Amino acid sequence: MKNIFKTAALLITVCGQAGAASNEETLEYIIADYQYQCEKAQEGFRDIDYEEGDPVVAELGLSEDNIYDITIDKDGKTATVLHAAFTCTNVGRSWCGSGGCDTYVLVDGVSYTAWGWKPVSVQVGDSYVVLVPRSGGACHNSLEIGTSNADPCYTVAAWDSYLQTFNSASSSQYVLTINEFEP
Image (tube, rainbow, N blue to C red; front, side, top):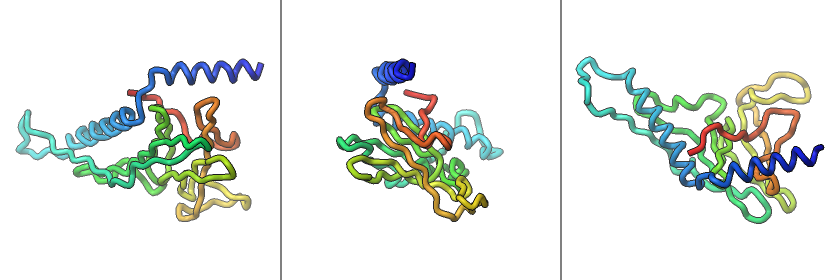
């Protein structure tokens, strides 16, 4: 019975990815969505002199170091990371908070998301894991006392080359979840 579920999951993943966009197309789609949100946010900042048809000034900014590649498996497969620390005219970094920002990890055009800081990949033996730095407030410790946002904390995910998805511990939330949207 367990093999049926594995086979079904593999077929769903493979069939779903057959028409998947490239990492670049998915990245463009995500950035375009943030640009749209930035433009919509400007509606609350219109002057009293605003006239229908006036151009909307909505500059979306992102530091170059917020888009980068990481290695996710022993064969050298890479993922593109977009750490969504965008700035927007009049609203600043409204998509981030004290616990970080949304982060997108793109693999073969499929977007996985996590909340926190910039993920990194670390080689462990002959494989790789993705570490997502999290706000200390998102974690717990063995003393069963709360942690502060300043306390270091990481979640980890490993790329499953067979199932073409990320695995993470079942005792916590998924570290990287598949986004609902696709270009």
